[in-house]
Length: 339
Image (cartoon, rainbow, N blue to C red):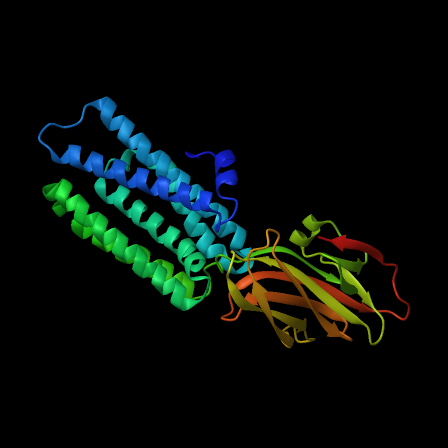
């Protein structure tokens, strides 16, 4: 992929890091400038020579590739695969398309629409950091910012080459409406990731308590993580009257305060998930490894359980699944620190 993951993984470490914003803005400026210069040259009577054309196409491809790579980093970090996979497939299609449709990179419509998608994606990441809040209003403001920025960019393209832009404007407008509608449909269908929240850690334990700056937990041996892919989840052995604890750490940008939910659900004999407990938890952003907290459930029934970690409007931040088995004697437990 054009743009290099090694550099991206460093530059795109945290969305509230000034370096991250500087890199995103630099790539957006590079993409916008190279598309505009190529459009200007293609609009003139003297077409650019092959070398100049190749350099501008390569610059556009590199900048857009780096942007899409960065967006994938953040969107995948924040996404819960079980609920966000349609949007992730959409992102993957654009990611792959930028690489394989090189023949279209010099066409104004293709370049302009990829640039619009990049503007929109960046606005969705930026606005919650600036406003220090998440939710529908922040999302709608992100869309308004992206549309306004793209409108002024289109005005610049008109000035750079009116005739060529005029021939492409209907296709650009139709593509812009389609991208906007699709992103909004993903968001309001709750398929869109709960950006910029990221689940850093989560697990079910027999006890959780704070010890200084760390959390001390006790737990049984867990199956390897890969076994969860085949439906094998931890089995927790519980004595009558015992509590279980769900610990989680959720990253949020600095100064962002919000509330999320721990939704404890039990699978009843009919096979349906019933909500047994729903606990609101305040989140305070800024900690590198995420804001840590835990909730508990007293005397959980035997059977399959899951705890959904979600925003107030139901967007999945993550999920922990496990089974409860009733026993008469306490199981062997190991204690460890979470920092």
